[in-house]
Image 1 (tube, rainbow, N blue to C red):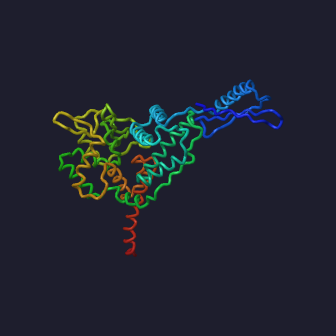
Image 2: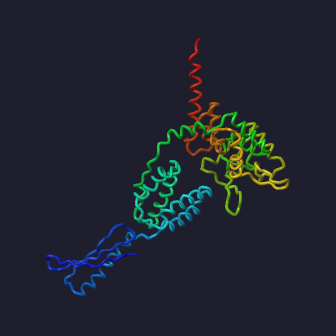
Image 3: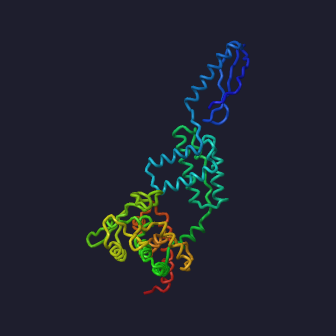
Length: 385
């Protein structure tokens, strides 16, 4: 809503008068002013002048007017847009969580009144006061960028202030080095985990985790494999990765027929050990049945999902004495490290695991091949004819 300030009448050198009205509107920062020249400083002249000036102001505002909206209100519009854009349920859930955190600070503020300095300070505090990772801070930056892009596009803000926002990322080289060295399991460590699964009378988890080591699938992808997704051609078994298992409020476990990225849609060949797992778990199942299931009673069967798998790993982790962050994702990275160790090329591995970029794959690949290089370096010392 436009706020008008008291008119000002200034006498000019030519004997006429300048009639001015200052005004403020939520669509821009600061106070603006419009004026016209009148011949006489009378009540009648000032009344007419006020009508003319305000009409000019309205015309001006109609060219660049912006609808005031709070971060809370715009957030609801963003969620609706994500729904219409077909963003995956899991990604949308993550965006919503980030948006909720942002609105704890900015919720009642008008989007048009936010400044780049405020956003810079907020993200900087996430990094250095809350000690969040660079990747998490980047998610916040991404959501802020979507907010202000939407606001500018649909008339809720004059400019996209994110052009002046810069994330001062932390130096995480040492952290990344440590992570890449502990991102995958050795053969002995894999055996320890699989044996613990068997000890706990959960062989289905042992087979699921081994399947991930053999295929490089994400946990959601592995849980979403159906019997019909596996086929044989020229004596080679293949699996079509066409979706991921997600938990939907009110629906339980649902196969989302969308993978994490476009490159995650893929067909890969199965090693003989994975074929044996398939043959074991596909017995007496229909094409639409899921490969990995578990019984919670003699008659009831349920689909394994990432939540139950992670919960089981947390239970057995203290008994493994493995000094690594053992989550389901480590089995996927173990697949990458094993292929690198066996000499498979980087581009083949990246396509097999469905990485949109080779970032993580490359880090593991280079680390493993670097270790192999050191072995060769020691052997070359004794090389002779």
